[in-house]
Length: 351
Image 1 (cartoon, one colour):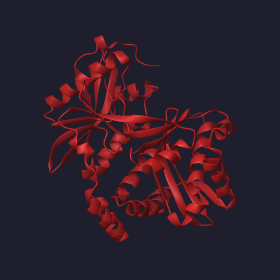
Image 2 (image 1 turned 90 degrees about the vertical axis):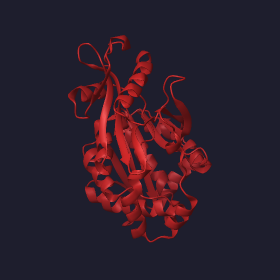
Image 3 (image 1 turned 60 degrees about the vertical axis):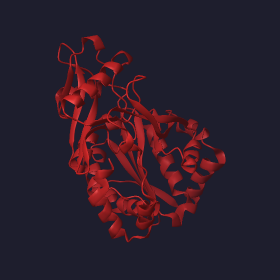
Image 4 (image 1 turned 180 degrees about the horizontal axis):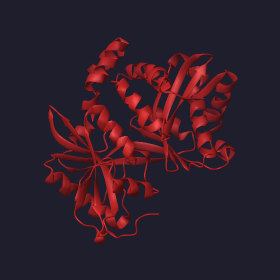
């Protein structure tokens, strides 16, 4: 149940560590909290890249938290200190009822200025007129039901249902990651090749080890791997908590695309979600210009909606930077060890 205090009862902004019991209790009480709000996610990101993680909240007279959001403080040699809620995260709405949203936005700005932060970026939209907004992409949401067959009937007959059957006929089997090496070795090998094909730096391998230790092994998510015989041909990582599944990472071998392994991975995730009482599967953020990916996600019977980011302090220019085309060409032609090295050394600066 949500805390019943009103925004009017809230005091000045409260800056707390992620392990503060008040913050844990508050996040756990919110039915609208995403996996990204869970303290484990922000702590994982901060620990992997050497950042500081915290939460900014509104506190009631009895000491309880009534609204808030996790924040990561990002530092690098070329830019001033920034607060982001949250870096490397598709979306992170404020955890606040309607009457507290504007108050929390003002408190976030005050806290950032008090800390001498030069930029405050939110991966969400807040009250109109508060900060600069821009559309960062779209997400696709699929409502789940207890009856998986009912969800199956909503899938596009030729673009999805037929491809699920094809993967089954071709002998593609899906296996849930059961140990660290399934993610850190097997999935990461596919991930590294996929990122090189796309011409973008991969996350460091250490990130996936922490992802296993902090999120997947404790039951806050899962990874699925598709195999043809003993060969891994595709994989995906999902976060799952609080009645919602979020697709976060995916990778595949284009040699085996004709077998439609990605379709059977998503169907397995959907089926598992229906069986375990989850209410929504979020297919993750897509760029506006990526019409092919948007069409793929739309074929699953999803609803598309825009994702809006807000800058409360400073300029949004850092979040709008496009990857260099020259760098992408170089990465596509580079050996895998070079791509991995680039990601290990530089990925943290992409926040």
